[in-house]
Image (tube, rainbow, N blue to C red; front, side, top):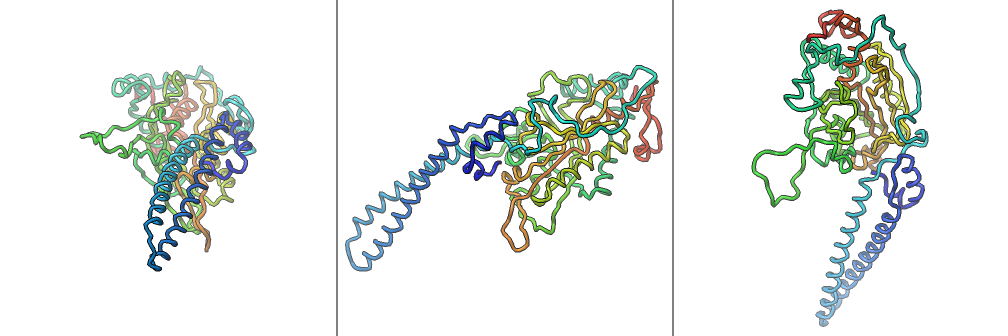
Length: 436
């Protein structure tokens, strides 16, 4: 959530910055609510002061043996008026909070202008696009004999679910293990295993709720419902381990000497992606269930931009060691996520699509998530301050699998195993992926 002080001090500047994200901030509604909040707050403080003064008068009159009933009647009226003012204040504040909960983070000044992914800015391109002496196939055709079984996945669960078999499943597992080992042994991350179901408070904290409820899979609890409990928590399958890992520090104050905190988590992810209907329906690119190695960092505010550079580098290490060609892109304002101040995407080359496709998004959220989460740190001898949070994929395992299959294909139904993965596959140097 944005710092309310920013809006109160210069709402026009905030609205102009948000326009870079394509977000139209309702200045008129904000000003009306903020004016009402200030007015009712002033009224409440006046009534409170009047009641306090009357209470002192009652005390003095009682001590003097005077008739205090007229003063009691006056206090009773003030009490009713004060209660009514507090109720109105709570209602206005709730409406203001609801408005602000749907306002995205401000983009950093360095974020390029633009409306769509076509306006993203190229930072660098790493590796040469492979050439083949045969017509390269995409991962669907490469595994048509059963290595990736989309038909059975659809039968079991529905469209955009996949069954992996044999060598393809082993390769997928090896990729996840390789990523975890690299990040924990070389990049200073602590591995965590977190719940795959999160409550609505957790999803609010990282910015998925309330705006993106339609893109989530909501979990319905079994057993008898409680119609009288309107405050019962709602549960969702996690769209990314970012949600549960970041919420580990919700309502927590850590000591400054514990920072930075780096966590890595391998988890399934579940996304209904209602807003992506019709896109990438072929193969593994956009699945309702997929697995990902997620990197999450909590840092001091002054350290977060350097931390973003390091985070991107950690994700790039995986691509470099797999010897996959890729490029790094700075997202433009219109393509930037709700909670992000700046995002660097890594896009891997897929011969089957003859295109680069996203395989990791690395973002700096500044204090936007931490303010929603009340995730703080205590400087030595000082008052608690909001942390800065960052995360990124290190990497999306399914898309990495696709990239290895397509870039390492040899034309006869087998795929060469990247050297760094061979120890995870018993020393095998090639796999038959056509039959699974």
